[in-house]
Structure formats: structure tokens, C-alpha cells
Length: 431
Image (tube, rainbow, N blue to C red):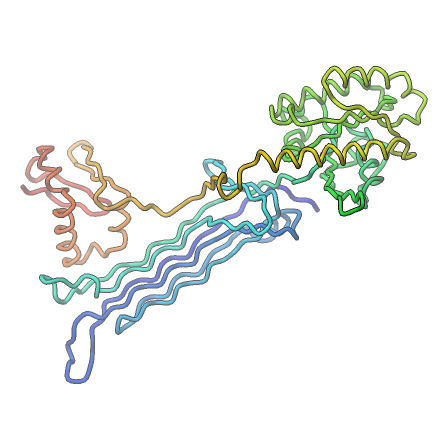
């Protein structure tokens, strides 16, 4: 079964908790703080595996969770970092955020590995909170939770040549003749329901991938039939072969077929409309084809498209066509090498990341009688602390003073006794 869409759920591992411990040594039964830090939670990566060709694996497994980091230990022992997990996907996989549908990354190159969800940082042990005033801190930080997402995976086939056209135009037969692919072939529309790939070997080390895209119909750009399901698979091709049934076996006019498919490609994607195209008049072995070949050739010439008349069933005209396709591809690849920027320099990877906002970057807004302090970095830091501890509250009071929160409240003329809320912490403001 060919699968080109999947929805999965991923979660990076939580960071291990820092701990509150004390040195217990001979002749020093009540030593200083010695709580170790928690380990980092495992991250989730995606990697392109050229041995995969569908998203079938995600039909049976939809949840991926990395392990949590280990908690800290006594004598300042650091908890063990958790192992990362790597999810293998086929080349051409587009990863989207499940809620916003924003593209996070487009995975095309074999071996390409991208961080998708970062593991949570480990919490700090009580050793880190010792200072001149607080000699024996009795609190530590909790580990950060790992990021979690619902992701949409979408596979767009990567092929050098894409075969497009109406159903029953002979695309599958052509693919079977020029490659080792064995697609299902029968004399009725919509025989091909999923894309087929074949490798065309031209000898002397020259080969390329050809994709047989299921037949398109009028309105495909709007999703009529399975238009969107099929059209996205031709977005990556370098060259399109537009196969037309020159004999009009199904009662359609070949020239109208050519015009209709050309318009569908244009309406779906401006890129596809500009993609180099070769018009292939197929089934020329049938008597009804002869009256349409000249009209098709004129229509193709009017759009600056190359034209070839063939019979995939008898292989007549196949060799000149494939020689032209080979030369076109070599020219297109040479042009791409000269104009493309290095992938390392031009690639822009969009991926979710842990929030890195500093604790001193915050805003204060009024919400009825309350004043709400908002700051991603500050709230993120406070989530790692036990707010029920009196010592933690004192620690936060000093932090608020240091980052200028109290001064900001004073500048806003917040009245005495007003409720101030910072994350899950509420307190009454005193000048």
C-alpha cells in the first residue's frame, strides 16, 4: 500500500529534577549543599532514509516519546542525559505543525537530520542556590518538560520526470516500456490510483527517475477527483511529459485534453506552469490518431513545448523521445548546478524550539483589579520551582528586585495591596 499522508504525535523527554542533598562526610556530618543536577531529556529528530518510499510505517505507530532525563544525585552527581530518538522518513517528506499547518521542515536530502522537538533541560540542584546570604538552600529546580507536538507528514515524490495527462492516456504503459517498473495496466480510466516510480537506465552511467502520476481530470486544481492528492507529486519534477491519447479512445478531443491539463497545472501552481514540458501524442498505432497528430503538434508549438508522436504499445517513436528527454534533463541539471546556492547556505529550517527569552524581559498589564506580569522566560523559570516553599518565595522576591519588576510596578503607580500575578504566583503589592 502506498501512503503519502500521516499524522503522528511526538514528545521530547522531560529533564530530570535537581535535588536537595547535603555533604555527609566523616567528621563533617552537616556539610554544605551537595545536590546534583538533573539530566537532559531526550530530543526527537527526523532523518531522511533513502531506503523508504512511503509513510506506511506511520500507519502502525503514531506516538513517539523520548525518555526522561535522570534525576540528580548526592555529592553533586549529575543525572544521566536521556538518549535522543530518530524518526526515519522517506525523501520528499514535508513536516507541518498539526495545529497551525505551518511547514516546519522539508526533508529532501538523504541523510538530512533535523531537530523537531528539544528535550527539557535538567533542573539545578540546591548547590547552585548557595550564596553569601543563603548558606544552606533547601530547594532545587524541577526539570523542564520536553516539547510535544502533533505533526502532519506529507510525502511529495522526488522524480526527474513526471508523467501527466488524462486517465487512460497510456502513462503507465510508457513507464513500463522505458523502465523496469511494473505498474498495473488495463484499458479503463483510473487504473493507476497511486503514483508509480521507475528508474530509466540510458546506459553509460546515465539514469533518472520517472514518476507515473495518476490521471488528472478537469477541476483537479480545486481538488476534484483526487486532484490535490495527485498534483502535489509533480511539484518537484524537473521535466513533465504530457501524455495525450491522440486517438481519443474515450471519446474526448485530444487537443482539448492537452489544453485542459495545461490549464489545471497553471491554476494549481505557477511553478508547474513554467516547468519544461514535452507533449507526447500516444496511441499513434490506432487509425483515429492520424487526424489529430498535426493539430496537437501545432498546439504544442504554440506554447513552446517539444512534441513527439509515439505508440507505447508498439514502442514506435520511443527511442527519439527518450533521447530528447535525456538531453533535456542533462541540460536542466547542468543549469541548476550553475545557479543553485549551496544547500548549507540557502536552507532555512523552520522548527519548534524551546523558548529562550531571558527572565528580565517581561510586560505588565492590568486585568480588572489585578496586574498580570507576562514574560516567557520568567514564567518558564518559575515553572521549575516549588512555589509552596517559603524559601523559594524569598528567592523570587530577590529575583523580582534584581530584574526591575518592583520598579516597573512603582512606575505604573500600582496601589498598595493590589494583587499582582506572575505565572501561578500571586502576591499583594507593597511599596
